[in-house]
Each structure stands twice: as structure tokens, then as C-alpha cells.
Length: 159
Image 1: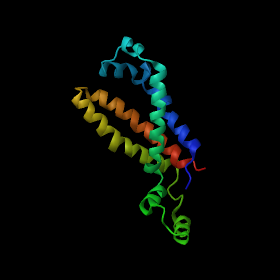
Image 2: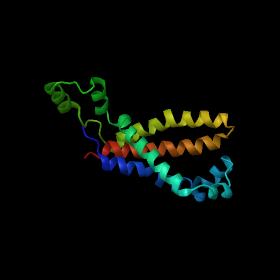
Image 3: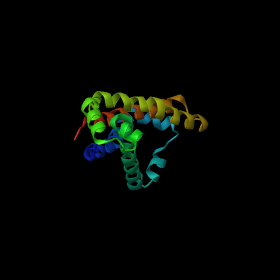
Image 4: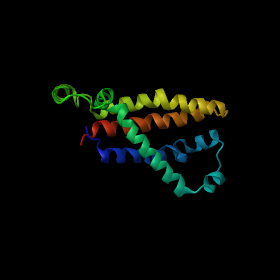
């Protein structure tokens, strides 16, 4: 099972593109700025090239990891450490491979990862940072949708 590297790269761009939309002042940007105690001065003080460059690298890492969340065949290879004999592997793949490779299935598992992983991580950090529930829901909502789209691309776009 070879990963679809084009799908991984396209999925890695999703957080940046969706971030432009989600955090736009006309969508959730103004509410996020208030909840995050962010100012225009603070935003302009950062090196935008470094911020977006590192974000893209981190998105690429996340995109690679998303394979393990949405492509179930990768779990079989992991469990057997690639030691399945040829006949067993072939029989397994003929019966099961691709059965759950769809855009819808990837979106489901990506969204589940957002709710069951991103939301708790963001929530825990935000509670200790004394951020509001609005802050938590804006950021977690972004990641639920982002991971659903990434999962959809990675699962459904079969090479």
C-alpha cells in the first residue's frame, strides 16, 4: 500500500486555506481575536513567512499522520509488521482493501479525530490559559472541519 503523496500534499494545504476563511474577520476572526486577546499590533509583530512556513511543515506532518486515522489497511500492515506471507496478504487485500476508502469515510474519521483528539487538547490548554468556551469552540470547530476535509482527501483520493 503506497501512500498517495499528491493527496497528502493537497491535504496539508487545507489547514492554511481553511484558516484564511475561518479566521477571516467576517467569519470567526473578530470573535477569535477578542477571545484570544489578540490585537492587530500583535498580529503584525510576527514574521508571517516563518509563521506560515512552519505551519505548512506542521500541516504536512499532520497530513502524513492522518493516513493512520483514515486508511484502515495501514493498521493491518502495522499489526503484522509487514510479515504477512504473500498468499495471506493477497487474500486479505482481495477481500478488504479499499472497502472503506471513500471521501465520506475519511471525513467521518477525520471529524471524529477532531472531536475526540483536537477538542480535548485545545480545551485542556485553554482552560489552564483561562480562555473562554468561545475560544475553545472556535478553535476546536476549525480543527474538526479541517481534519474532516483532510481525512476525506486522504481516504477518498486513491492513487
